Amino acid sequence: MSILTSVHHLALTVTDVDRSVPWYVRVLGLAEVSRREEPDRGLRKVMLRAPDGGFAVVLVQHEHGERSPFDERRTGLDHIAFTVRSRSELAQWEERLAGYSVTYTPATPSRAVPGAEVVVFRDPDGIQLEVWADPA
Image (cartoon, rainbow, N blue to C red; front, side):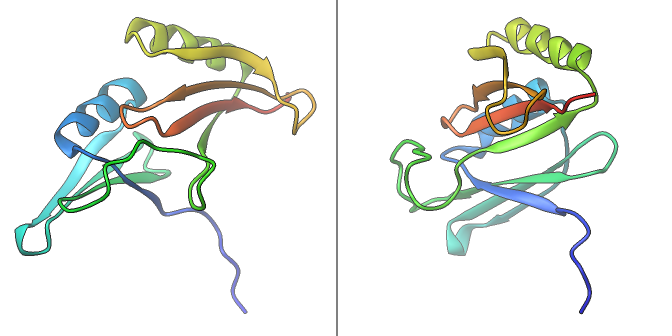
């Protein structure tokens, strides 16, 4: 049997792609690569890709979807963690988030991985995102 080698993309349901796309582009530095609108299905999808092409995030808006706030305690997505190469890069992300007035928790030691540190913040829909630096 073949093995899985990486994640191709993450698809997140958002309440408004017109609000979320600029946020993900500006704050996370992703670039829009495609957009698909299916009015008959009440569906809008925008694919964003990391600058190095390593992963993509697809933002999906369902016209008739539930509009309740994100809650990681419900079955489904808990959070997404992105990796940086070092603690100094993690500090750069803290500066970037502060520069865009994104509320975040400053780098704290991970309880799951000794020596790792993580910065936690949320997107416009309240989806928890993290930037993670593993130990050197």
